[in-house]
Length: 237
Image: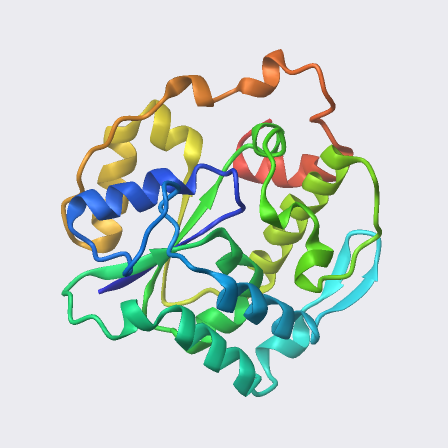
């Protein structure tokens, strides 16, 4: 079985990566403290390759349609296979990887690996955008958007973009949505749901309940009108 965790950086995805590692999943040759498979430069470059085929329609709208029908760029395939070589070459019964930037190339990852298990991890954007991440500035990965010097707005746009690219991608055969908040506040029930999805027992890790709802005591801007509909869909409002 191969598993990957997708979700925006600073979304709590490390909790799932650590859970998989503690369960015995092989998560790659080198893992950092966030549970990311590193080095990740080849995956970062793969993001820039795929972004050439995404059209910015203005505002918070992008056209991802080419990604679902065109041949996958061979350079993208080479870069992804290079990044994942330790996982792909492993003969471990259960293996996988976690890297937030995987979300930026989700459409082509699904096409390359149609039969693996996808854990789609979400976190309340009001908490997510309080922390910085490499994907805060989408332009660093070749993705066009209306630039802004407002750091919180930039992060919110990144959160929205990553939500949009996932929604625009045809659902793979094996996919589950997990909210960070549910995992932290009711880990036992969340684990049962994920265990049913994967068909195996998972380890239980320590979690920090204080990581939920930090926006409530935040003095900066964390509410953006364009996030409201997604927050309703995800049960955050």
